[in-house]
Image (tube, rainbow, N blue to C red; front, side):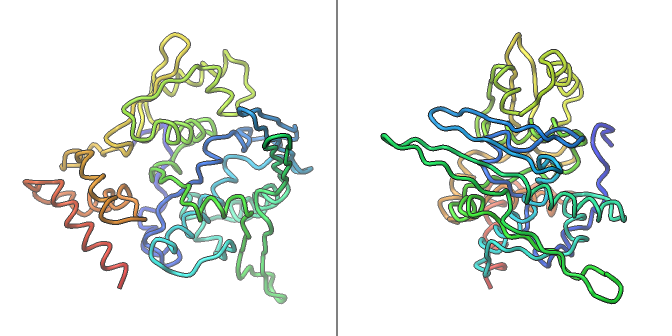
Amino acid sequence: MNEMLLPMRHPEKDLFICDMADAHIKDDMASMEHPIFSLSTKPDTKIRRYEHGHNWFEITPSAKGLATISDKDILIFAVSQIMAAKNTNQPYSKHVSFTAHDFLVFSNRMTNGQAYKGLKDALTRLRGTTLTTGIRTGNEEITHGFGLIETFTIRKTKLDGRILEWGITLSDWLFNAIESNEVLTLSPQYFRLRKPLERRLYEVARKHCGAQKEWRINIDLLQKKCGSNSPKRNFKGMLKKICEHQHLPDYDVYIEDNMVVFIAAANGISVREEDTVPPLKTETFEHFKARYHGHDPYPIEAIWRDWARGKKVPKNPDAAFLAFSEKYIKQRLV
């Protein structure tokens, strides 16, 4: 086991999460692009403002502090559930009801009393954090403010205070991103990353590197994109430690002078060391997307590799993957 990663606490989680086996980890592209969430493990009550081209945005915390990158796990959970329903033609809305146990298992967390309390605190920070954006069009500037979530609900019994249901209503900003398919699939290893900066670095790399073989960025700009308030020397030191251990999913990271280089694994999705099937061709993924509009090939590839592990290596892995995908998708449309 890589000691830099958290243990896989719930290896059988896909068998029972909300009866949705297709709930692969999804993240919205807007919050992957911009440093909206705090990387601090202590309450962060500073107002942040970022300029992006001709536009700007400001993040205002509540008295309990800014929503953290760890709090964002709730949004990733909600986006993943909605996209799973959307991709299988099931009804969905911007309101998501769930049990705390399902969320904690999905996000690879402990399922103890402290974790349940932490969930309520996270919802409070998400509801209390306000994002204000300014968009300039012609001679006008439109300012729009909203919470990271619109509402949250905790339903309990009167007699013993047992929680029956948790619920959140997403902001229009986030729900519109889902409706426009402005989401990306994250590695299942994302929730095993221990440190906030590691998670933020992975998000930035996943958003910008994409299908490219490598992506380079100035270290100062990377720090700004990460939203790190550490001195540059400390930030660079943390980067060097990540480069030393190379434990980010899907990417290797290197520092060259004042540049940070992210090198992607095959098609941006890592091929695990124990895999016996070689990486697939780029054309295979293009063929998949042309045939199955609205379906993401990469989580299906991961499922196929899990299924193929230990079996005889196919003579034509690309054809085998496409055949598996056809059966897999048909079964979920029935």
